[in-house]
Image 1 (spheres, helix red, strand yellow):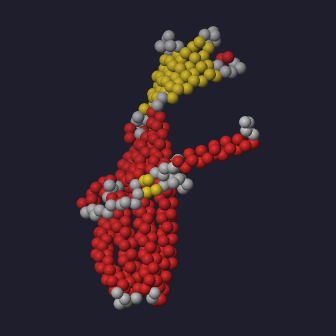
Image 2 (tube, helix red, strand yellow; image 1 turned 120 degrees about the vertical axis):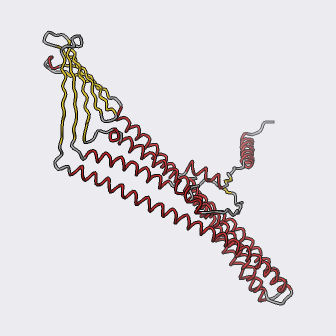
Image 3 (cartoon, rainbow, N blue to C red; image 1 turned 90 degrees about the vertical axis):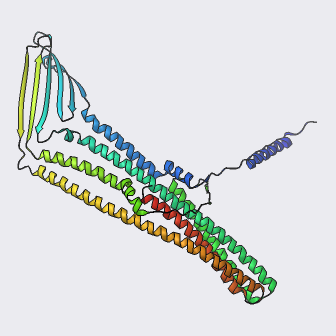
Length: 444
């Protein structure tokens, strides 16, 4: 029996699509679950602000190579062609600046003489500033500036990494706080519905009205908590550099652990590790070098020059040596004096900045230590209050079930208990946030 094509083709396609759907149903998209450390590692690798800072550091590394090229030799070759053959020549030269601003040049020139024979001449010159500059330190200032800039940007990257760690903790804590609060609000809504069922069984109109009012209030609390969780997840994705459309789940198990801190004992280490103070120290060393160079430039410039030249390599007797001393006296030396004074003022400003930053570090470390202790005491008080509210809630529940009071007092006691649970969660998360902030200020 021969089957008609118009029947078996649709049947085959239907079977094929069914198989594809079943395969798609079997494939479950795995969504990564991140804990706090995983979020921090992801941020260090993908956060745009850290990536930009790494680019800046790489740029400064290249700038150091550019500055060091000052002491590398340069080669040049020149070929001149003219209508008059007597004006044609070849010239090659090697120039190099050595530390201490020794400027050297070795050149060779080949041309034809009147008889049509090639004549080669060599020349060597060297010059050095003896007074008014030309020191070893001054000649290396461009390199020192570039290396100082590289070191400062590396410290900036280190500080940004530590700050990113703190910011991820804060964003992560916001989401965890929101998740735990949402769970408590959902339980609150469930209890409100259960209270309504119990009130309807007792057939008390006042109890039923009180229970019904509580349900929409709990639903609004749930909606608000859900919105805070979603906004917190968006902020967390942005902080760690994760695309908004990428799925992300995080662990909400956070261990609350109290740590003893002593800000006075941690202060010396905090001052030593503070990237801002380290950057100021680099700027101060560079400013001192700039000041010494500016002091040398205030003096009249005395430059020594020595030149040797010889024609025809085979006849070295045809040579000439010249030496000279050049003394330059800038008119009134106003520019050099003004630059020297500027360097002095910059150095004084850096000393003031160092004092201000050290005082700010002391103040901020003590302040966060005090807030951390306050948060710890707040958690203890909330835990003590929770025990009292639990006893109160049980008491009001028993009295309501016995018919001694209406459910309004019982609902109030439940609300107080649930609000205290939310406050306790927030207090513990706040303590962990402050602990992370303290470790950041302490340079840990």
